Length: 346
Image (cartoon, rainbow, N blue to C red):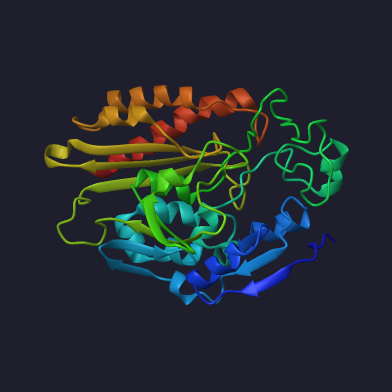
């Protein structure tokens, strides 16, 4: 049985309290549902000295209307997936949250935890003995868990691309692509106060430094501006989320496709976003989805975007399935997601 290393635990009573606890520690991590952090601690890929628990932070829980739909970061994935307001206004998010892991893990895992999910790789998500046998990797370098790294300069090697100066671990969050497609914002609370930013700015395309969130900041809330407000600019929104994985009951995504269109008079597309997940170290917004704007959602327009999507998928040996097939399936999934939205309009 794998056991977690020794650590200190602090039960925060609110977001501000959690931020203060983080500020005083160099090696501290937040514990939400624990479905990602705890297994990583047992594998010694993450070894915090201090774990700051968020279970008692009531200010981080709940789904409510106000100036849009607002979802607390500690709201469970099960509650997000089942909420009628989310289904009615942000179907892609409901589908994404409902596709994470298993029923039991969705009852534990939180929305904020899924958005901050550690990036994944075949060479990283292994036990300590397995990683020691290959000399460890760049994402778990010298000083992490007391292990030595393979390279002489102490920086480690990315076994996916051995000459690369960066880590290629992939973003495997389901909810982030859906929320990027929906134009969501996130609120972060740190010792100096709050800041709000578009959710796509929360991510960086680096397998190690994959979040722009500061070490002492807590993700407190997800906002969908305009949702739930009568007469809002989000009338006519259609969205969906498609997920590829080997075992449909609980695996991480090998590909996620979130699609959103907002239709105006005559079913002309006024806004469109298609986002790929699990193809890079961050969710990838397809610039080509802007070509859908200004015309009905036709077969020709869908075909053009799905063809262009393959250029953004550059599979590497860091997750499941054969590389060339993973690239081909991107086209099929983008087309399928957009055709679903097209059928909903008719």
